[in-house]
Amino acid sequence: MVANWLIFVVALLVGLLVAWWLFGHAIRGGAPRERAPDVLDEGAAPAQRNQALIDAPSAASFASPATLMPPPMSIDMAGIGEAVMIGAQEEANAAAAAGVKSAAAHDAEVAAAAAAAPPDDLTRIKGVGPKLQAALNALGITRYAQIAGWSEADIARIDPQLGAFQGRIARDNWIEQCRYLAAGDTAGFEGKFGKL
Image (tube, rainbow, N blue to C red; front, side, top):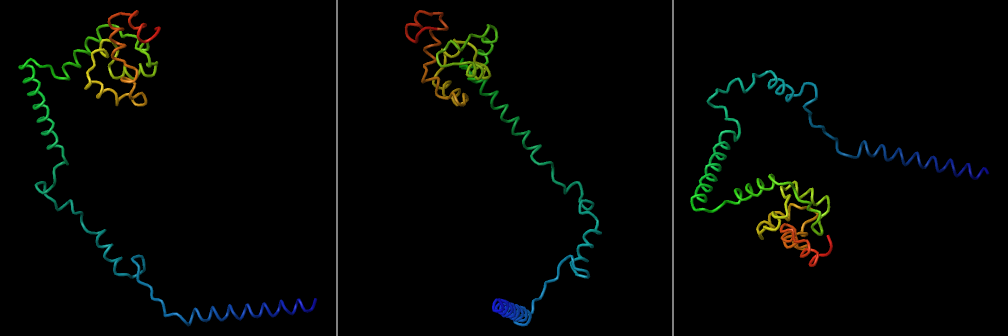
């Protein structure tokens, strides 16, 4: 038991000597460290410069109205919008003179015709449920005749807007289904696509 105390005391002394040596070496051994002055130090020159900037008059008080910049893009963008509107009107007038309907005019006529008649039950189309019908209605599509008259360009424009239902137009053959439904040909529809 005495041997254990003796080993403990020797280990403690060795530990103290090592700590003393490391502490003493760290203080004497390294090059003296110099600290760079900080802006927040008392008496530092940058503090005087900062105070001078705080006390100086505002730069805005020196600016004359002629040197101030106009509001960003407000004047320029109005001119661009007017130019676009005038160009679109000229194209529409040229198309009307040539007897050609613009896509916007065609869509407006279709929307007006759709608004005049009650909407069709688009869920009768195979592959169209209540959620897809709501999405189509949000796009202004409420009649079988609208879908039956779609061109490839119409499909390319509408299909990406269907989100998770994208690709259903071609896969479920909506145009052919709607041709039967718009014509009221229930027998032809059921013969080709199954019972309604």
